[in-house]
Image (cartoon, rainbow, N blue to C red; front, top):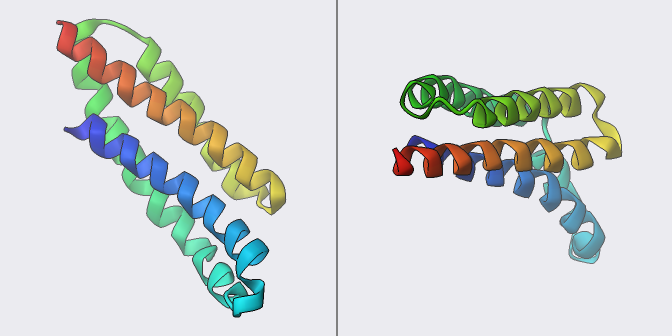
Length: 119
């Protein structure tokens, strides 16, 4: 259950990064540019990243004891580092790094879930 929740939170991160771009690109004529700016507030990054880190910290160590596979933990660490760098860098690079980091975290959760089911 934690892996499913963690994967969905990472999907939410990707949507959070894509949505402002889509709103600016397609919603400017509808006056949605202001909404794009409010979605991309700084506090939102922390609000999304904090539960992702907590779920990984709770989920992965317990699962490692069961399946002894380090790959989910490696992917998770790479993902969190990439997401953190994305927040620090900002700008257009942020979107690319957020997508890469989210894919790492989603992969970590899915592999972790698969390994737990095979034990």
